[in-house]
Length: 284
Length: 340
Image (cartoon, rainbow over the protein chains, first blue to last red):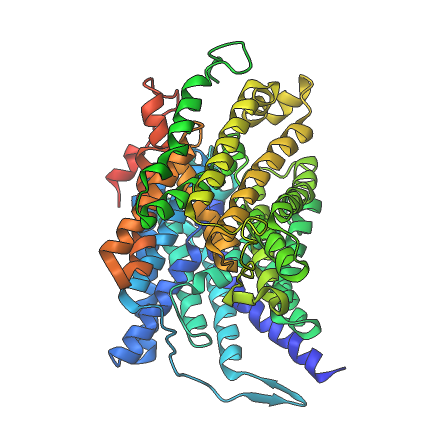
């Protein structure tokens, strides 16, 4: 096998792991609260800035910066729900989506005002690893493992805790669960915080690989939504698998053509999936 | 839907015609160049917003109208730069190309019943595809650096559709009025009733014999055509094209914002929205100077959220409808307040 193709495939899997976290977070929020957070990628951007600021400007240890980033973005998720989403729960979906779109602009503008449009780099790099003829970036591999761990923790939380069970139940039937003594508003809050924390984790994994700038959300935001829909909105496992599929398309697309065309192919693939399997790739 | 003021085809058009004539005379007052520039930008933005709201008000929410602006403007500019085809022809060709793209996207979407969130995301993907293609084809489009239509030789300005602000004011005014006329024509046709029924319940509409796909496709084509015309004229007026300002998610959301803020259920709403957004844009540019790139989206975003929370029908909705729409107020459930 062509070592470059092999490398592209491996990178695709690693990329999929990074896509997977925001997809899971978005899916959780959509499945539970039934609202699309159009500004999800911007929450990730805020987290990336938090890590960059604490690590390079304040000189904090990286682990502590990561922990604060998780907390900050989880708080942002809570605030987003309380200030914007909750008052709109009874409104048509378009109002909800556009309001979170407004938050997208607010976060972008705030980041530009505070940090300017410069690209900020963390300057952390792990040595590449050599496997036969193939080189893999150590940073990407570490991020991949962390993403899988995060997904595993989320799965365990949803599967084995009382709150997790309530979350899954309300995603399945939001009419009946309140009758069973589950307070939906409380579950919405928890889901929003967890969704925010997942964005924070994604931020930690992205900031070591990419330079952060105020518009970085636009570069991976759209594809995150598409993956989410491809996997079936609210379908966690489907979203998780679709993330890897999209990662492979983007990465091997870069091998056959160039990076830009690979995104065109990925988006066309998304449109085709919606036309042919509107309930998601993995719907039964 | 409002009943028509008159059964005659041109009924109720007298006042708008007088207003239009008055606007056409504005250059006679020789306003400063800057003011002309702002007003032309407002008209073209209003046209794009009118196009978007044409379908947006029937629940066909597109996050990809940037695609139509991009296709039309780049087609026009490339035809001029590469083959010397005048924009007088280039604009219709570009608009036709954008409408064709709308059919290509719309027909399968409507046929296969892609609605709501899904339709919004399909259009979002389409807008991004056009933006990335423009960037990727940088050998002829100039990529993210943008491109400029070539200057016409002296004396050929009219042929090349390159003339001063006054000429463009009239062209923009005509195009904008055309957009409003299209809105009026749609409102007076059976299609608007059919579309309102479809927006309410697609299955029920189909069951009484409304051809859902055809009606949706028709309004999508009109909407895309108007947005495309706005895009091509904007590019030709500015003499500069850029993938970020003519395609992709950013510009698409800006169009949506203008239409929503003004009110997408009223023909004049998107125009009010354009007055607000461009006016805001310019005052922020003056007020914030170099900080403008950050301050503008910040203020926009807050306004968009506030509009959605308190004024979802936009400013025109405030002016037009005294009676409140029969829509249940959002219910911030009480039990949530009790526990954290």
